[in-house]
Every structure is written in C-alpha cells, then in structure tokens.
Length: 147
Image (cartoon, rainbow, N blue to C red; front, side, top):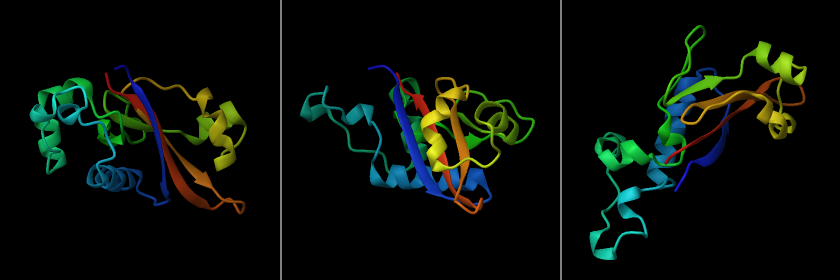
C-alpha cells in the first residue's frame, strides 16, 4: 500500500501532548483510520470488526506492521531536548520557524510552506498556529505513516 500523508487542525491548548491524545481519541472513535483487518482486500466473511479500544488496536500484529495511515500511528509529542523517534511527534521550534520561514509566529497561511521542515516517515510534526493578533489559535499536526 505504501505510506499515507495525514494532517489535522485542532483548537490550541498549551499542552501539545494533551491535544495529540484528544485528537487520537477522536480519530479512533470516528473510525477515521485504515483498519487492515477490515479492509476491502479481504473476503467479506473474513473481515473483522474494528477494535473497541486503542490498546486493542495496537495489540494486532498486522496493525503494528502496517499502521493506520493516520494520527493514530504516533503516540506522544517529544519535549524540549528530546529527540524524535519512531511514532513520536516533533514540534516545530521557534528557531526552526524563524530560520526556515522568517517568523516565530506561524499562521495557517504558512502551512503551504511547511515542506521546508524536516520530517521522516512514522514521525509526525506539529506547529502552533497564530491568529492575526499573534495569539495561539490552533495546532496543526501532519506526517506520513503506514506500509
């Protein structure tokens, strides 16, 4: 299948990891992810119902190998001084934003230029987006994952 790109906007909150966890819960509850065991590639009689919890989802070996092609494939936001690793989210730092886009206060208008930020498969990114008065407005999560 190959990796899939994904992105999400959520209302701003100071705790980026709490925002990620809430988003993951919403995506899971909505069923807005690739469920390998229920895929159209399987005969209908062999399709399994979606899991009842995130824990149950990740207990499945096929899910561990192929992912969900969604925000569910990343588990937490790394903190300052922490290196991003498989299944984590790295926030865009003020230094990165200033160096690559010339501003500390990113907005939705900058999102189209976010390809300047380094990224890797199975490692998400996030950025705090500001309104016209430079107040934090929302958080943008993006990445690509899945096999």
